[in-house]
Length: 279
Image (tube, rainbow, N blue to C red; front, side, top):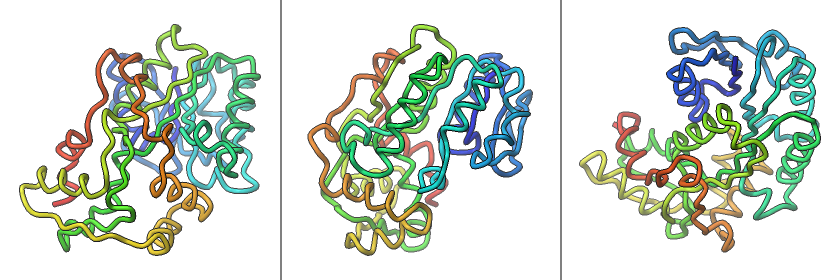
């Protein structure tokens, strides 16, 4: 059995579907009751209380570990989840980390994630670490304004990074959970090209078949909005990257191609598949 945390999100949902389609026994873990594919067991648990994961982990051979925003905050103890997994007999953990542990290792959230990576390496478990850059699905922050005003509002309109489709992350995660050859793998996951917020607005307009205007926010305006859904420190870290990406953050990684044997999907593909959210 394979346990998927964050199973109702942009990565966990397609990952759960992929594993179920591969005839794997899957336990989907989320904080709240949710619909899951036929044959998938659902367990409600809060990762902030690792002991509550014990029923989900019973009999599991592998765990996909995705931390919610509050588990990046000061005082959180995500390392306890790895300890609980090991105590439950899990053999393999695939951790969703972040590209920032390589490109900006001294931010507080990056230091905490690096420590978690180190603990996983030293746990005696089989492991793989996925380090994605920005997500294409972050464009869903704009869904309401596009629906109601035909506007994308974002900071740093002409500064781009190679954002990745969460479905590609899910496919890479499935491969790492199922294939022994990925044990000990550390993969940096990006999209196929650098794309700016203004260009993302143009791609959404193309998917919708109607105009979408771009409105540039100040950094302070963006921080205020982002801090409603994530720790302020994590919002600042994200804005640092979006506003002034380093050469390493602009690099298009070959790792999706290496794992899946195909190029990562462009943002326009994500926009076309998710266009209903913007109508």
